[in-house]
Length: 419
Ligand code: EPZ
Image (cartoon, rainbow, N blue to C red; front, top):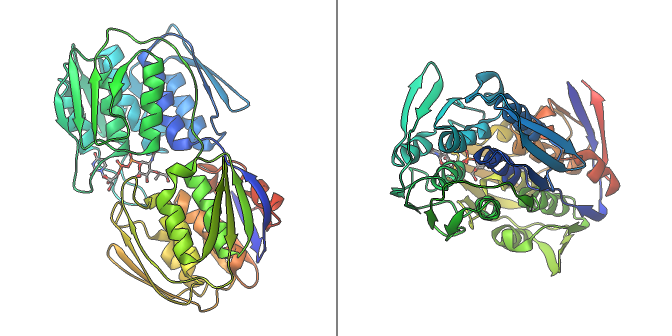
């Protein structure tokens, strides 16, 4: 297993944002809706992408992945089973259920189970697909689904924590081949859902309202292959905004769509960054004095839960009391204990974390846990006095493409070593 060794750094320069992991994954699943070839560009080379490639290959796809471009073709042999050994490594694999059901009339997909950021229920996925006429049972950790015919329906997809990104994706994909019209009420509005809808429309799907809580789909009899380029990764861009904030650095973030980051940019400005937009460039000037703020994570366009940990690292050095309320994954605080080992003064109580910032942050040996918590530890290492060693960085390799190279190019003192 690899580790990162990180020292206090001041950064300067430009960074190019990779394609969005969370857009690419459901779009890859959508290729199951057709036997024709699909060409998807801008796909980041990540562990999670390679896991999804293995799942699609086990489901009868032939895939070539070269230079961030995926070529997906149908092979002769087709199964309908997504195995536990693959699904357990990546919850997002569950979004193959909808397209498999719609195209092959049956599917057997391992339930994702929980993970360090909390329980990962799939009740909304199951509810939505059942309301399209599918018969689903849960047996020995698998969701087994059958549907001779899917029929359009009016589906309310809101849950205890509001909308669900991948439940919206699953139901949206299944609805494209259902008979009649489907309305998805309380749909997720994330840019990655919009990207999926745009890809499906390129395949011939009839969809409107994507990006709003009300999506309408008129089912068609079949879908064709398509060419597409996924959007830039707004969470990676937001992570670099947090890096500039924490290290009081001037960083130009290239290739991101700033309109996907409004809540993040607003929050960064409140904390103390000067941010200007010039076309596809987000210019961030971190200031030495950071101010404490109150952050509440919400579904899009609210502040994203996937940037909560990274901004917590910034608030550790903002003198005063900050409050973070995690409304999406109330247990997503694995980074708190590790940051406290570095001298942060954070108190967690349920979905709330109070950060008493402004004390020193000191290098330590810390453990990565989930993808975004690991990024938070890298940020803390870039501001800490002394050496920080971050163990188990395979978590980072799941969702950040060439992170240490991008940071090194900006002047960061970071290197990857064998643990
Ligand atoms: C997507 O996960 C992202 N993953 C997550 O990013 C992200 O944190 C999350 O959306 C929220 O924005 C991908 O897109 C691959 P949800 P998803 O269903 O779709 C509850 C990362 O770091 N819920 O929108 O699985 C759920 O427990 C990853 O890149 C139900 O109650 O998340 C949560 O509280 C981590 N029932 C809330 O909804 C369900 O059936 C939002 O989860 C489904 C979800």
